Amino acid sequence: METLNSERFIDQAPEQIYATLLSEGTYLGSVSTMYRLLRREKQVAERRRQARHPTRKVPELVAYQPGEVFTWDITKLAGPAKGAYFDAHVMIDIYSRYIVGCQVHARESGELAREFIAQVFATDQIPKVVHADRGTSMTSKPVAALLADLDVLKSHSRPKVSNDNPYSEAWFTTWKYLPVFAERFGSLADARDFMDRFVKAYNGHHRHSGIGFHTPADVHFGMTGHVEDQRLVALQQAWDAHPERFGQRRMPKKLQMPEAAWINEPVTQEEGEEILAA
Figure 1 (cartoon, one colour):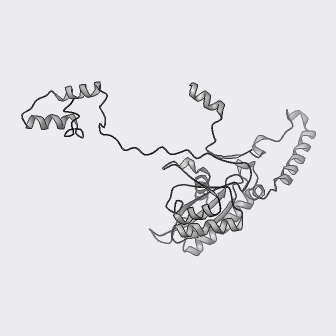
Figure 2 (figure 1 turned 180 degrees about the vertical axis):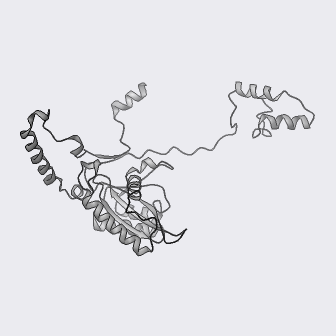
């Protein structure tokens, strides 16, 4: 074991150690014996000290109303030729699902990202938290400086954990699978025009299942009350006309607004105790 774990052989497999020693006229034991000893010492694996990535804190964010938590990301749009791409910057309010900002650029940079965020804040509002993944633009000094100056908390996904940015990832996936999405855009102007039209239609007309089948614009600007009143009037008429069909007279759960929107819902004290007990 002293020989196997020596500086000379610590990086080598038993077969290589065996062959090297035999070539030098030394026989300590068979390859199977070396493996048996290593298994006994639980060393049948990498035996060097391993560099380990530091544990990243799980981002836990919650929004109880619009304007509290924004999330953003950049996605590629195929240009007119192979290898040509445009960069679409999209920022979402996680509570209302409203697209608070969208810009398309010919390239990606920290300065362009800073200008994008500054314009979103000037047009909509300044949130408490801005969440993003760990792309170069998201972690750039211009973006970090802007958020610090405005006293906005910055939050980042863990490396290679797409679920930490679910709202942006889900929106990109849904959008790119729609029939109206072009496989390629003829120019930067075409890409910008498409995105402008699509975002307006999405915000104003798409009834999102995650927000009680309201439109993002209605939720973002506090106009759901009128819609809910109309729904209740229609349901009340149905309840009164056919009471035998309805066991309970209340708004279906799918049409109710959620209490909050989460990125990695925090574990409650009771849930934590159950996990520890298990």
